[in-house]
Length: 260
Image (cartoon, rainbow, N blue to C red):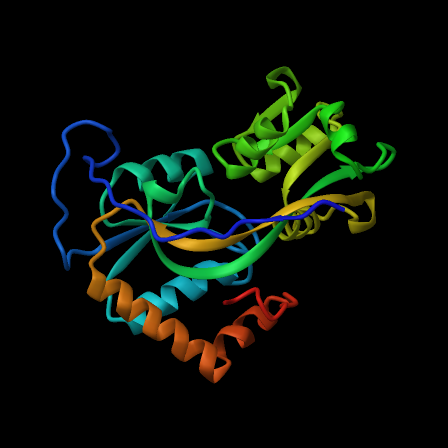
């Protein structure tokens, strides 16, 4: 099994006008923060899940509230959320995988979790257990995700890639035979698959290619004081066990390194 773990350093900052790369403007420290995300169960969920918001979204909103920071949350397709967060000061995003390609583009505020990325297929398609199998397959991936860049780095040709706007689109493509396998977060895909009433036993988990730390990030404009307050609250939640209890409420099994 292949495992590539990413470890990186702190990021630089950049500033741009809301929603557009032109006409940079300074951020206003102390102004409300905007938090953008996408429908990615069990990490972030917009509605219709028994009042649950998703474990990472709940965690981020608790940290922001305890740090005394005002924020507003909105949902977008992932590629759009990433665009907004990468161009707009004081716009936070989760779950943002910390990769070398993204390192200098974002402020890395708080680590939230470590997730594992795998190839998944459904019967009767064979399970993808090797890079050689992956390179020969038609692979589905979430548009705008770091998983797309990873597949391209492996040498997967563009004509073998299916880029989906959201997780549901990926699952439909897999069911309809448009792709033979998909690559992404094991937890997100297995959780979303079951939430739509699909039999869990049909989904085959294959090769784990890598794991990556998932953060609450921002393009810029978040002050050092605000970051320190968020991290102080994170340490307090780790120390009193409330962060681990939150994950347990979602039925997520943790390893020792997942939260630190």
